[in-house]
Length: 220
Image (cartoon, rainbow, N blue to C red; front, side, top):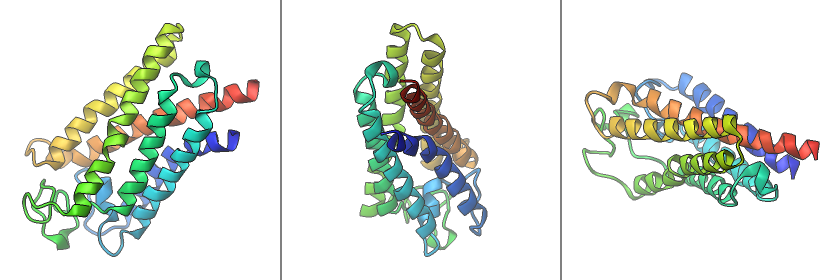
C-alpha cells in the first residue's frame, strides 16, 4: 500500500520535469504560448505520449493505495476515485493525440491560438483528447475542494486552506488557458503559462495529499 501511495507522490513532479525537458529540445516550441499536449504531436511526440501514460499509471496506482487509507487521513471516499479518474484521463491523453494548438506544431499549419487542423476542424483523436482532459482539470479541483470542506469540519485549518486554494488556482487557470488556446487575442501569448500554473497547483496538491497519507501510514 505504501508503495502505491508513493506512486502518486512522485507522479506530478515527474510529469512536470518530463514535459519541461521534452519542450526544451523541441524546435519551434514556446512554453509560454503552447500547450503541454502539443508536445505529443508529430514524429517526436512519442516521449510526451509516454510521459502521459506513465504518469497516468502512477496516479491510478496511487489512487488504489489512497482508497485503503482511513477517511480521516485522505478525506471523503470520492477522492481516490477522482484521482484515479485523473490518471485514466492522462493515459487517454497519451493514447489520443491533440490537434494542433496555437500554431504548434508549425508543420500542421494551425492558426495561432486556434485548436484544430484548419480553423474549427477537430479530428476524432483531438476530440477524445479533449474529453480526457475533463477528469484532470475538473476532477482534481473538485477533489481538492471536497477535501477542503472535510478538513474544515475536522478543524484542520491549514490543510483546508491549502486544499481550497489549490482548487481555486487550478480551476481559474484552467479557464484562462482554455480561453487562450481557444483564440483569445489577449491571452493567447500566455496560454502555456496558465496551463503550467494549473498543472503545478493541482498535481502538487495530489502529491501533498499522498505524502500526508504516507506519513500518517508510517506513524500508524
